[in-house]
Length: 525
Image (cartoon, rainbow, N blue to C red):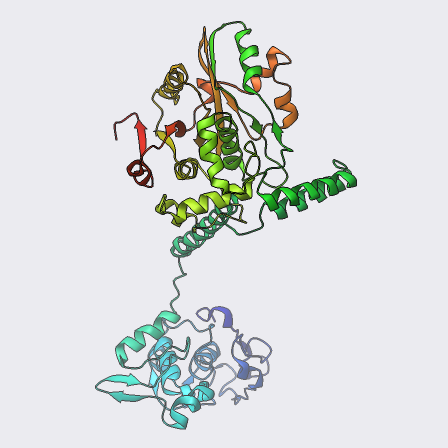
């Protein structure tokens, strides 16, 4: 059958015996998708010829209806189209242009006697009118066995879509038919329509991962503290052979004692760095003049704060200089109370965390305290320039916060930062503390500046420098490369500098210092 697609059949006429036979698919079996065809056995009548010279085939009658034809192929096509599985994919309605199309145009419902002109109409009829047969479980569940759908003002209530199961309550019949037809649309779904949703989900996952990484980076994930990180890191050092078991227990005892008294154990400290830096710099070629702070000790990151403690270590460097001045020392010692340690004792990281919290409790930098959850002690949260100003102001030490909020040259450098630092160190004063330098994700300490034939270079101590590296300063000219930074090496988008400018003398100044203010350079916005 040419018009039957996958269900095409062939007809054979055996003229020698005078018998005409119609064979379905050559073997008596039905086409694919029509299970009843295998049970069909056509027994067609045979007719003897009237005359030996005239052989005229007799009409062939359909076994299921009065339809007759002389062509067995046409009869086979009639049987396939009119009497077997009208929903079979082998049927291609309207594909044949034969004269018997009127006879084959009507498609009968296999359950009731209604006929339809197209397969889609018949399919819709079966899915809607006979859904209780197709899905009896759904029909029984509706209203405790009551009729599945009721019509109210032309809309259906209590009915479900036979395909996806959504409710058709208060939906017009026409809308319901449109909904069902969409399930059988032959047009493939455009995969591009799903791309925006997939992109949104991927973007949301990326943002969530970045957020968690930032929380961990800034110590906001509540995972451990200085003491716990110290113990874990030193255990790994023992396993790696970097520390002996005896050293491990000795360091543990020292840490417990230091933490209980709030005093740093000094294991990462290198004393009196500024005199060595000054001597080495002034003897260097191409250096016209060198300015350094009055005094400073270097504090390196240790096992307990590696990865998050740079702000605390730079604060310790600042305090190490302030402790050498009588006026500043008195202000710092007052924070210990009546039973404090030695006047030269350096507060530990845990002690510094408590000092910042005490400043917050008295109303210093309320906004900053809220951003850090009003808690620092026993956490790994980072601190920055604003926390340095907060704790120093609480100690009645006057500070200036300078914000170099953008580069001031076309190549991304900060010449204004270098000029400001030079003016700071050139200004005559009794005691010149170092400068706290903050940029994205890290902080350092400026201990001086060089005027060179090629321009200005900052002298910067970094907590990431180990005690051995800092102890080597002064041994050779090359050792200054560790701390010498020219303008090409300072290209972060933004820098903040904290400078100590004296003591807070009056109560009015003290109360005003609770609100942080910065000086922006350049002052264009």
